[in-house]
Image (cartoon, rainbow, N blue to C red; front, side):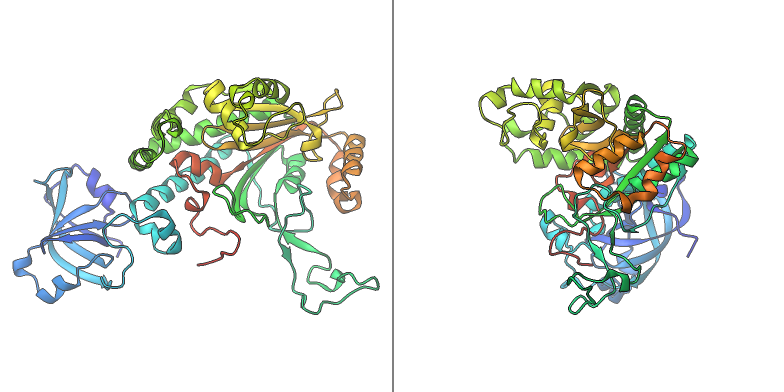
Length: 478
């Protein structure tokens, strides 16, 4: 089994006239003579040339789209266009048959909606093969970026008793019989009898636990699944998604922005370097898709140009207040083109506002800072003006917010005061407040939604297409 050579290696090989073993799945079989074989190592197929006159007809009938085969043959220079080499088959073994009448992925164009319904098979298409190879590169690059900078990879819990954002959109975890749960005198559920002895939920963020690690290890990052029970059926929301959340002791907001910008540029450059073929394929796919749109809705740049553009430009940094002034005076706002008009300071910026700043006004990625404290989380460091906090969001073209972070409030009395104002029970977060009681220091961190990043780098339009098995309202298939 281990003697096989991956198709990517064969197509890049400078050697010819050598015997090889290649295995994969048949994409097409033409004229009883030419098999297009793919093994997922690349979007490109290798052509297997079959000597059909000397091959058992019963075997030829089994060479159908989707079948898994093993081929022993000679790697030779190809006479056909678009390929340097091909394999002249000496032995073909069918490892797994595929009934052409029932196999849903026939050699034709399939809609993304249809492919979501057969997510267990969509990896076998060119589009999804490219997406998940890019996703793999981005994942590996994130770990390498932090590892090279001396960060500790910390596994924060998936089952928690805290709601980090205070948003109350968490999935409950219990082993009580919820049809007939034990109750206390006032009728509330008696969670003391539950598995963990208290109410628990799936994590919405690893940040608070990450801060505990940073208060001893200096620089940590988490990279794991997070869950939101938002009933959002949109192209930008998932109920289960992955987050990268670094937390750094002795960092202020500027350090935080510098690190986030460096991370984004690094991982995008790694994808361009290691997945050039996949990104070129996805760029062409996007260009075809854009042709269906009205001229004014088409992107001014190809996918590859957009990625390079993020590497070539320093991200524009400005305060929320400056952004609101720009948006208030913008043509779309004055002509009432925004779905959510910007009326003044305190407005919670929507995706359309973020994209206007990035795509129309500055024409580069943007970092917004110093948001009103009333629209931000309790743990963000308060500014001296009493109105704003040391928050930062990074906005990307086509996506809007891709990173959200802040300098954290390290002053115990300020943090407790803010928690009281927002109705967050201090007794439940006693352990978090301890980090401010014992050796508090300035620190900062951010969260990067991994699927948002993959969405940007692949040019896909729906977040359900960049995670292997999407979880969203009324769907937990596969």
